[in-house]
Image (tube, rainbow, N blue to C red; front, side, top):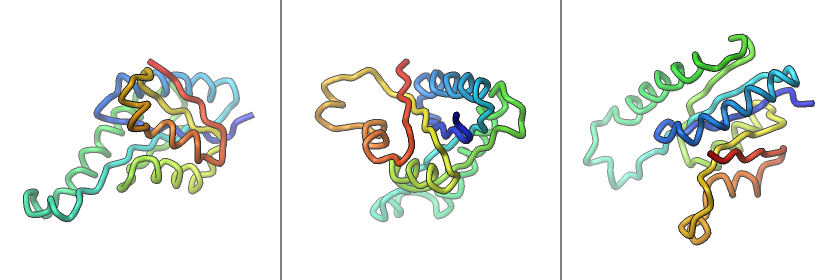
Length: 141
C-alpha cells in the first residue's frame, strides 16, 4: 500500500508530533513502508542577522540534527527502515519539497485542534494537505 511515509517533526512541539509519529509507525508496520522524519529549521530574515552570531544557522542545524537523532532512536522500526533529515527554509514548502525528493506516497502530519486563530491565519498542516501530490493523514493530539 505505502512504500515511503514522510513525517514532519516540530521539535518545539513534540506533543503534537508524537501522535503522528506513532500513527506513521503503525502504518509502516502494517504496510512494510519506510519512514522518513523531517524537521524544518526556518532561516532568519536578513534584518535579524546583526543580532545573532554569524554561525547561528549552522548551530541551529546541529541542534536540530541532534534532537532528531533522539527522536529517530525512539522509533520502533528496524533502523534500516527509518531515515531523517533537517531542512532549512519555509515549513510547508520544505515539507512538500522533501515529499517530492524522497518519493513519499504518504505524509503523516500532526496538527493542533482547530481554533479561531487557525481559521483566520491558516496552518502548515492545512497548506500541506492542500498542495501535496500524495496522500496526507492529519493526526490530532
